[in-house]
Length: 120
Image 1: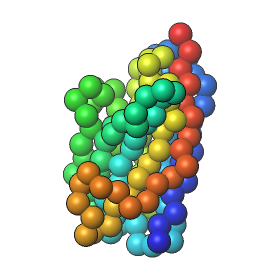
Image 2: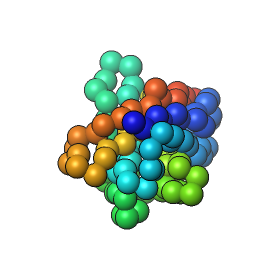
Image 3: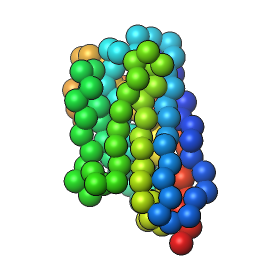
Image 4: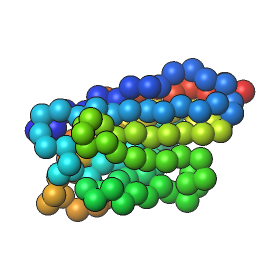
């Protein structure tokens, strides 16, 4: 079983950058597809990005000019780099992992999330 813990969130001003980290433990990290989601109050959870076991990455069109997903298998960590942050990026950001037999868009494990607040 994989355990995921996010970090790197916080309160920033509009235009700032943040890098979120999601550290994994408990299983072979390189076997997992990883993803990032976010949820704002009163809204549905939104898929942001994924990176597969071979490190092919995808970010949704609305965010691909500002957000980047990456992974470091040696550190068992997936990252979400967020640039030029906007107030509408305010949300709880969570990472997720899917094992080899789990097909997208399904996920097996979730982290508890980290709050990102962007002030104007």
